[in-house]
Image 1 (tube, one colour):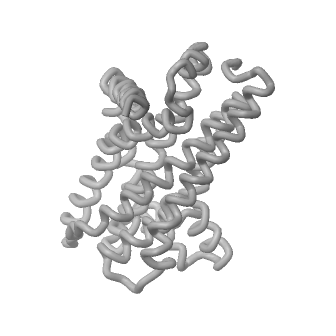
Image 2 (tube, one colour; image 1 turned 90 degrees about the vertical axis):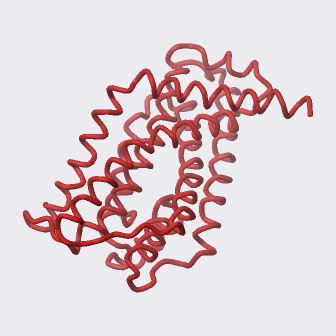
Image 3 (cartoon, one colour; image 1 turned 135 degrees about the vertical axis):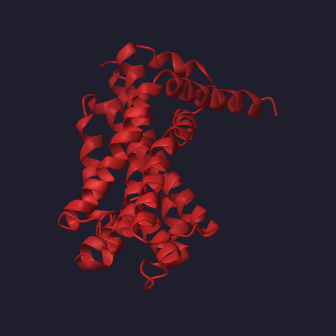
Length: 264
């Protein structure tokens, strides 16, 4: 009990720090709540050749909400961790009894909360656009399962990126490249069923949002079933989280061996 309490307190501290960053950076959040919905509408206009087509608004909305969520979640965790490295305080965090991977997952919780306003602004914009075009997108409580799966799988991805920055330091561009990969090959804008089979297979295996997007489209749009079913929807994020912990631990051990843990 004495071990669990300090660890729980350390996790709570990491969550609190992330939420404090959200409050202090509210101007940035407001800008993102404007730009991401505009980006969503521009994508629909581009795909629809200058028209907000009703048959595109809902499918693209589902993918765009997931893409916005993973972009905000991963970037907030990555930049907060790199901020500790750049400011020279990373080594101080090792004075706590909390395992490093668990500390990053604590930041992941606050990052998920911080990502919600921007993702919800995209969702609200989509609902309005769909309603103005005479359509309807009903809420279904079952989508909370794929949403949770996306958040858990993204935690594994954030761990890998944080581990990489311990060893290779200046890799910030990789976060933007990864989001571009998800947008193109993750089924966010174009369903995986419309892509080459090998691309769809790799996306369902390794992209945290791919199975979740397919599940949400199956639930909300009641279209033909796609994906590898609910079992893989639940298993993939757990596997990605496990891989993330293993990769981060290995890279952290390498950084310690080189003596470059807090060097930037």
